[in-house]
Image 1: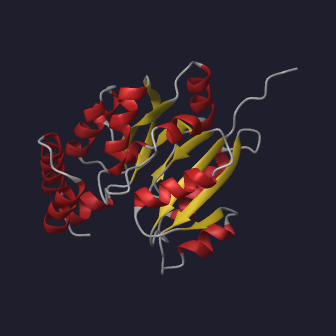
Image 2: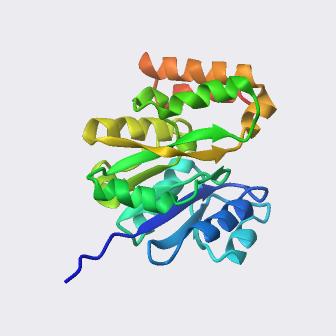
Length: 234
């Protein structure tokens, strides 16, 4: 009997993403097939801007969750039917044939990985930092690059740490690096530079750098979030 290839559950956490969720779901509809993708789970943390109505119109499965990206992604993972989880931000568009690249990586023995990244901006500064996402080192990772992981590995590592209101992606990926071989795929997702445009490119990158340093020096999730709230407009 021919072995059945695993499928993917796409998990998108949202909170008031009406400006982006439709564009993402439209993009996904053009790039996936039921043969490989089991479902698209849009996990909402309490949106008030019509995001849910838009997501429903595109046929996504809506999951209602408590606010908090780690909580939302963990709930989505628990409800996912497929063997492979693919976490994707609402303002990030995956590349062509992304599903096949994920499945090939799984077939090649990788249990977790991500894509490289570029911003929807002509800023040379942002292009410089995006270039480093091709390097397979934990310091170069982040949630905007999206993340695929087998559900078995996700559950064995207990998923995202819900104590983290920010930095949850980096903390979880750090544990994945210790647990398994991590694959950086040779294609790029395109993510929004909206936060950089709102806060200022150099200013925001500086604050992200400080958060990385604080984490390295032992700061806990509450300390990281306190710095984020004080320095970066939410």
